Length: 405
Image (tube, rainbow, N blue to C red; front, top):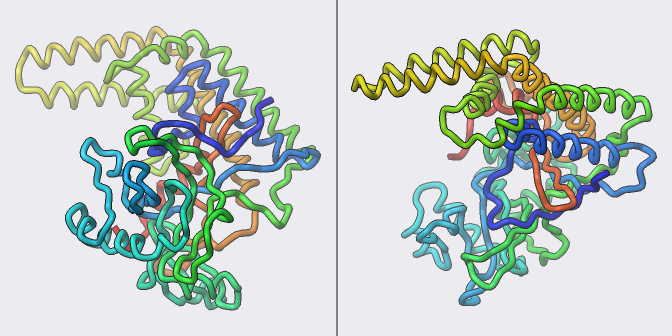
């Protein structure tokens, strides 16, 4: 059984895949990997487990921020993901920020450049900005007078009588850290997922925290009954994966754009964007065929030349033929996907029971309680996957008003 550890070694921490997408991306091995992740998470949440939980929380901050010392020249800098551009945008001064960025982003980066040096960041750290002073408000949330900030979709709220609220209001800028970097040059930096905020020097001007999952309430432990029910769901996922294994192997070897595996992932994600829960495998499978045919018509229509139209018509004829040939296998691929989502949701609901800073969605009728954006799990060899309630967060992301862009 795999233990989760908070580290990730890769060139850059710029993208994480959703757990259930593992079977679409990596076939049989991806499905097994997803189940291993879920098994390890359940093991750590089990009441009889002695293992420490090292899951990290996804904060809904913006923008992503990088700060620390450039190993090539010993200078402190701040930046966005553009520090990894072919022509890097690295900011050592306000003049650099003005040259590389504009608008609200430039203002946030200048505040970071002004206040982050006091933290004595070891190496280079990556995080998400939560607020600068002008973003803070005082609002009534659930009957409590709270300090609030909304960096992206989710609004964070802390009662004014809470000690954390005092520190937040006193600070000029707020940030959550989740990744550290090391290397002899910017081009060869290696990322290590997880950041220990205790390594930073305290500063009145910066409210700084890390993304480590903490539960002081004990509400997240799984009972023996919950563990038994969870294992039943994983057994279902394993059964579906075995039935789908032949086509999953074919999927994992496909890299062609507009191939059936490529279209399948887009199709499943379209459910999320449409605010619809993926269930009823037979219905989803039928809708997939319609999606393929609709996609084919739009593609053929978008091409003017007859050779171009003939090319795409032939291509999609092949895709429909593959769909018909492997229809039974695709049924079990979709069933596996749905079951992995179900298991993932069970874990998310347990993690959400931890006591932490309040998370809300701002609506026309006031504030609505919501869960954190999600969580990140990292296995023993450094692979990381997202655990996000995609339906809920996607719906919120499209509908919630934003304070900053």
